[in-house]
Image 1 (tube, rainbow, N blue to C red):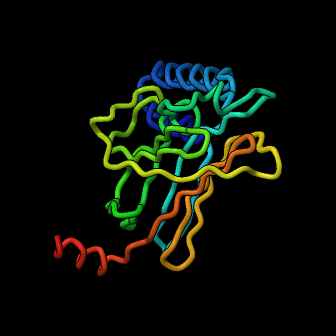
Image 2 (image 1 turned 120 degrees about the horizontal axis):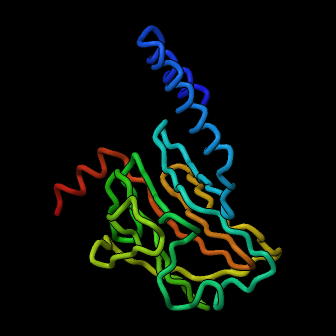
Length: 199
């Protein structure tokens, strides 16, 4: 905001006498609006891993448990979930990734899930920029199922972790006493190109 204020003032400086006053009033009004904006109930979070200087990033909302029963009640079983809060959860990768037999090219995607008691369905979708209730299966790239594990301690805030070691990685979802781990492979560019040539 401070940088924006400087830009507005410098743009108006040296013009008509009233222009500077108008610019200052506009800038101060915007600053007041920003100051009065309440904080999000579910802050935004970022999970990141680097591979040879290239990033795999997940951007998501981090809701709190607040003594609620999460899975099976707040987040129903058998229904598509935004995997976080507010905007749809985004997975962006600079490298090709392989989820089971599915090759995910470098790009920006949305990550959705269908929670279940024993297993979750993981969905990668090509549509981006939407609210977390705006899911369209027609844009699905693929689905895969992974087992559910129980954590020893209670996880009060929804958390996503991305870990990569050599060519293998995991995407882990944690909330309440639930842990869901999604394995994936990191495909080096030469290997990805060779795989495309074999299709």
